[in-house]
Image 1: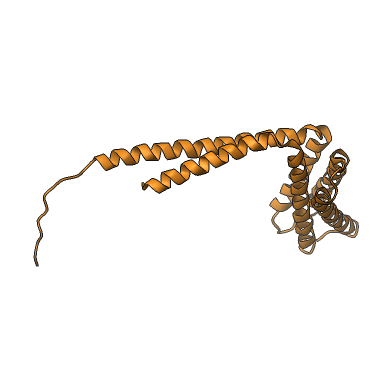
Image 2: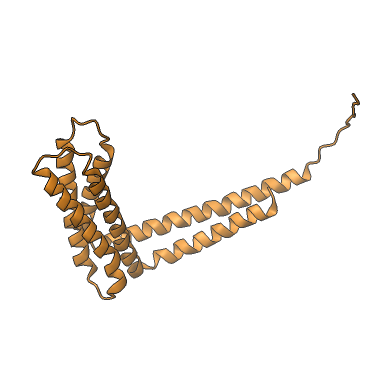
Length: 195
């Protein structure tokens, strides 16, 4: 492998290593990023529910509940995405509890919808995925609202550090292998045959 490839791998590894160490100590800014990412997820979930509403054959009671769920998810997603940017001294604990409540409501409605459409010829995996993710996130936010940012931040930081170390080690192994291959010269005799 050429010198620039292993050098580029080493540089990427060092940058990722530094980024991982930096992330571990950025708790306040990560809370804002985490709430914004929850907002992005909620916007996607709301749009997905609105788009899927046409294919689900829901009864007169479930259709309005699902529509309210989708619109509420979209609204809270936009709020969670924009509010951390606009308001500096926002109480994230209150916002996390509001998001957790909506996610719990969303998960319950998704499970009810799954039961209602189980006999239809449609893919159930988006409904199951939405229900599971919503319920798991809501439980985490209800039980560990203060620790969720810290735990996720440390986890992401450690993961980025591990990836950075992998890049550094892989580039060193590639460099060592490349040097060994350069030292090997294959000699032989060749004969040119004319037709």
